[in-house]
Image (cartoon, rainbow, N blue to C red; front, top):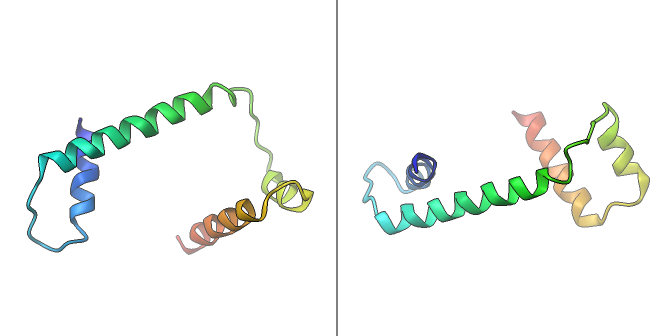
Length: 84
C-alpha cells in the first residue's frame, strides 16, 4: 500500500535526483512492511501489561542480565537519541 510506496521513494532518495521507479522493488517493500507489521502484532501480545519506569534502562544495563550485543545496540540507540 501507501507505506510500501513511501518506503520505496525514501530508498530511492539515496541514489540522486532521477528516480526509475521499479514496481518489483515497491512490491518487495510492501512485503517487508507486512513482515514488520506482523512481527509487531506478535510481540505486542506479550507486552500488553508492560509498565516502563524512569530508571528501567539503567536498571537493565546494570543488572548483568543483558548480553554484550544488547548493551551495544542500546548504547547506539541512546547515542542516536542524544544526537537528535
